[in-house]
Length: 272
Ligand SMILES: O=C(O)c1cc(=O)[nH]c(=O)n1[C@@H]1O[C@H](COP(=O)(O)O)[C@@H](O)[C@H]1O
Image 1 (spheres, protein in one colour):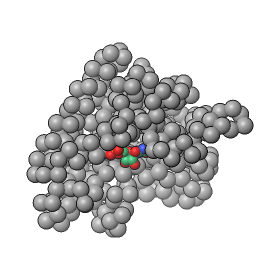
Image 2 (cartoon, protein in one colour):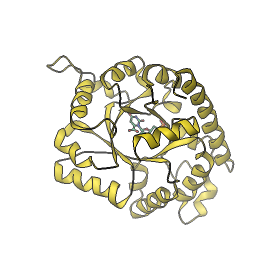
Image 3 (tube, helix red, strand yellow):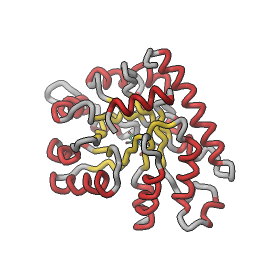
Image 4 (tube, helix red, strand yellow):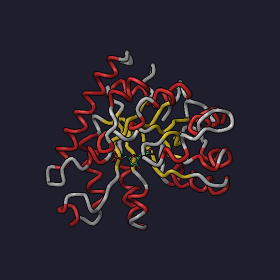
């Protein structure tokens, strides 16, 4: 999916919500465990319940590969079930020497037809390069939402930049902004504005609202640009809104509430 198709979705649905499919057999309602593929049965109902409010889905690959071959099959069925006009993110956080990264790209872009993949940039340009592909996006970790982000990402480099700024600057030299997003945690407060300064025209994937406590309003205030430029993810806050038979209904209510807030923010910041 290209940028203008993504932005059209955002304007049509008045939403920049990404629903994270972090589907955990320990957390899904017990009655679904009777099915042959409980992960897919859960995802299917979550997708049906949230697709009017979401512009992207992000299966976190750890939750699928941890189940062995069956998990990969649940992932494929889930991906096939996501409506075609909704953006898909393989949250895999890959990145290795060139020929190995090329295999990761083959997995997620050829075998599984994802629109994008998350990438850990620690190994530098030749580890990111193989993910550049026509019609596909790379989503590079810049300033993450977790406490450990401070261990490396905020360190100053010789140039005076902090590591996350260096990651952004370099990746912007290597890739077109219409195929390059950055991950910025909603929990990073004022720093989101500094990330926006470093990447004025890239889309951001912003996890960390909901369970991790980030504020949607602050993210919009500091990060929104003319064509929105944001995909804000919520996983547990939506998909585990209930662990009873009403889980899909509750997920729908949560997604609808976030979409309503997003609609107001899109209007406030003159996107649509
Ligand atoms: O790349 C990510 O999506 C990601 C980056 C980051 O900095 N923080 C972060 O939480 N994530 C992912 O975003 C999702 C957040 O889930 P919730 O906290 O349940 O909404 C998980 O799949 C995380 O792996």
